[in-house]
Image (cartoon, rainbow, N blue to C red; front, side, top):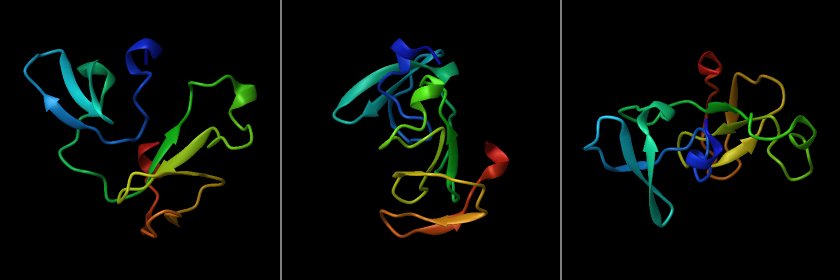
Length: 110
């Protein structure tokens, strides 16, 4: 992804589409503002996944991917509350530390 276009977007997060009237762009609600993004940079789904999404980070230099307080090179996104949490190993399931949702980890998508 081009950093200047997607700097406000988080991988694995759901954003509400507020405008879908252009063939090559979508306007999304990101926090308290709207952002127009090229459609090719997004994955469009009809509904939230039912499993934890595994997200690989490529936006940080390798030396910064495991810094204290960082989510690391890979993290998961909860399908229930969309919170992010650190990931170690390859667990088949996990529990969200924020909302307590327990479910399968979608390794087949990573």
